[in-house]
Image 1: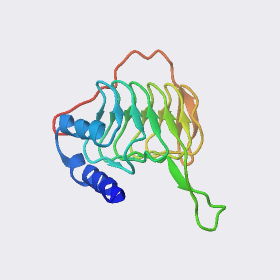
Image 2 (image 1 turned 45 degrees about the horizontal axis):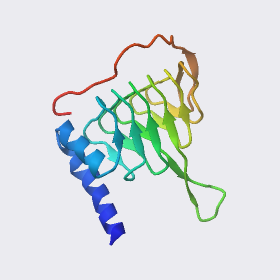
Image 3 (image 1 turned 45 degrees about the vertical axis):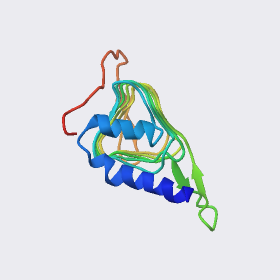
Image 4 (image 1 turned 120 degrees about the horizontal axis):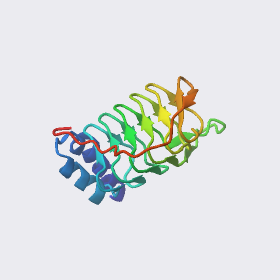
Length: 177
């Protein structure tokens, strides 16, 4: 019975709550029912899908834009003033290809403060994206990204350094988003 209730909570989250054009209602559900820790000024826009309850921690003034797939099975920690663009995929679980029965494994992802992740980028399990890094649109992150590095491509490679004089808020909240 507990499994059914858990799956129903996730179903409601992904197929009903995520489509409600009210930040307040969505954030209430995410905090109280999904047990996500979401800091003041942070938001999750419409049509985001989650793989599990719990396991998500977001700092202050960060945004997850619409249409993202966020896997929280292995825990996801997002810092302050992080901007995650539309349709980004962040995975925290995979399968060990060395086992014949594809054994599942969870690996925490950490995204530090002032990170930007471009549209349709993909972050693979177990990675650490450090302070001020920028992930270009459609990049696939297969290894840790160092502080203030700008990376792009599949797999993502270093492009250039970003200055680290950050003093802005990534807070972003539009009506009906």
